[in-house]
Image (cartoon, rainbow, N blue to C red; front, side, top):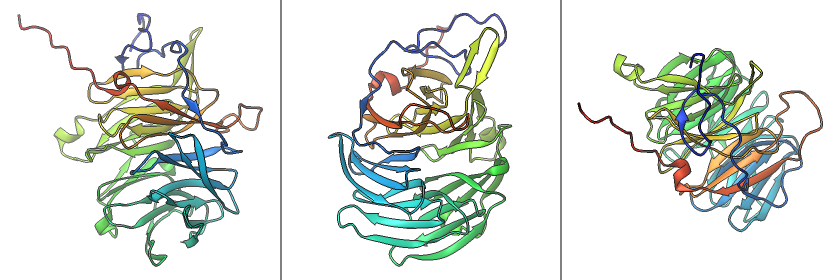
Length: 356
């Protein structure tokens, strides 16, 4: 938007993507704070596909399983080193990715832990594919590896152009985002040959990639307060749909402060999505209509990770300093679980001007 921008509407009203950052919302509760939070930076959190169980990985070298509805810590698994990512296998077991190069499966019911295998450098990302029954990991050793969790065997290693920073799965499709702004798209059934090798349309380092629930593309965020909406269809018509927008920025006295966008989470019912940034805000967007639907009250520190529950009724928010300004005193790491109001996430019908 160019100069002469009118003041933005109150945050509970929608505004155009890329508009001036609105003031914080009136102070609703940030959500229910979970008891027994991690003792160090939260690297990721994910809701189960079967219940309101929430799996959380942390730099304190632990993976925790919570019942988010009951606010109960159901169990924890101690690694030897910080855990950079986690994902569910079933409702009571999950996979972990650690800086000590290991990939583990842990069963919170039985306490059984199985080493799936190792990379040659810290493992940044782990995903479980319900479509294939395989585990996929991405590492700073510049590889993606596929594992059979039943036997703990690695059956494929795929070289990447750079260190893996973020990954996302939808159906049989895998999107890998690496350093150097590279994006590689795979079909999990034919990993030997990437479907697409692309470059991020954002000029700065990729922070997060998440596939659209409908499988048509992915959203990509950068350290420089922007999100790109991309599509797999490489035809001219398909690529005409893509766009990028500014977000998680603050304008004061003519100076713009720009924050990294750490997290993207899609609503499972409506396909709208939330973003979380180092400004401590969570914004909800309607990507199809290019509007912001909602901005929640500011969280105590950076929003490090986000996840909607399987039915979209809950949103888990990791309020956890991500060290973007180096080591300094900061608010304690905490997890908030908020009840989602339909008005915050449901797309608003387009208003059509009456025919003349």
